[in-house]
Length: 164
Image 1 (tube, helix red, strand yellow):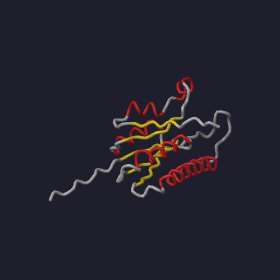
Image 2: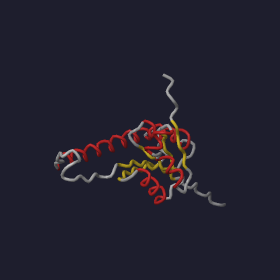
Image 3: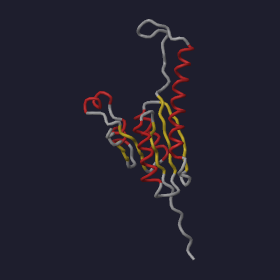
Image 4: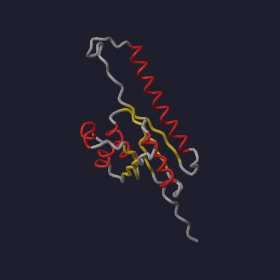
């Protein structure tokens, strides 16, 4: 009797941040992609802004003390922890899925693309902030950059507009 082949485990990377859009994308992914396919690995990636390098004086002439820099770093860590806790709570009911958490520092565009490549991800899921053309021109679009530069499929999930 032939042995049944194991279903390959998909690696799905979901980029999460402080915005509701990324948590909506994670929820959508869990409901529409993961729940229908067991044995998936879901990688939650949060990208912190790179640690700031401050000179002794900022542009206005004020000194940044080591206490202020440390407080800013603690705040960034608290934000990171909070985002990951919310993301983990969303994943709680999906026992068949292996959830991995990664927190990286750097430019979100570059880090998401590099992590996707390095981990050999099968699918990248991202939320869309829904910026208009002018805002996108100034700020750039992380999701657009990633869609153009990663080698795997990219699912950009747009949160429906509220009817209230």
